[in-house]
Length: 174
Length: 174
Image 1 (cartoon, each protein chain N blue to C red):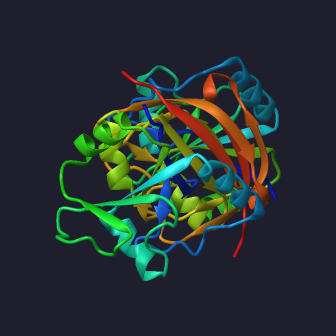
Image 2 (cartoon, rainbow over the protein chains, first blue to last red):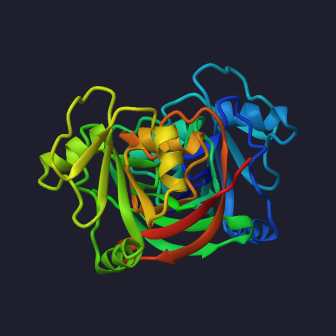
């Protein structure tokens, strides 16, 4: 089974973006670049919710190069760009099937709503967070309105520069 | 000026308690006991919001021994027990005055609402969190509805047993 990881940078109070989707508070340091490029070696598939994709595309970067890009949406009707495959069916069913296929690791780029759906369906294996030294106060939650508790097991942690803390967790199955 | 610290255990998604105030998910390990008793040596004053106090009292522990206990409330009218002093005036003004007086360190035990008021008033010097390896999904936020971003500086971090991560931050003034 292919590993599915949800990775996100978040504020200490658990937000991945401001209410207006702003991420100007993120610190893209050398060690984040190192961690990211280490992780990306194993990844060949990226999953994004429609909102996350549109925010990324508006800021210039839509699809990721050299990997399969899937965008989940109930409102879009055609692939938004040639490098992106639109998925309109149930995200849980689709990702369960992807995991059974041969391939590399699968990265859930967010947002929180897609991550919640996949966490609920017990399809996320690991959760990596880069906890930033800031209280945003309000914003887009790391995982919005999860209907039940999900237990984690700390696999690895590392202090990064600029006061960030990286932590990688295994998601515990019920 | 006396140091004011807001200390809390929280879930990875930033909640200090379940919606029903439940904290059955907290892991009270030996190293938490060690950190707590180290910290308590310098503390002589404890501040609590009314809700936090009532939750604590209902579970058996109301006032903390050997320290001055203050409970902030706009609804209570008399000291709820002999060891507790009720504060009905503006929490910011009261704590600003406390900080100017001689004495030991001041601990904000919570909840989030009192912490928010004091953070907004720039009266909190340090923020200590024990991040637990769990997503609660919903609950009482670490700091609810803070109207503006508050920047932090990481002072210290330590992995604890049971997958918890302790981090101590200095609150950056504007």
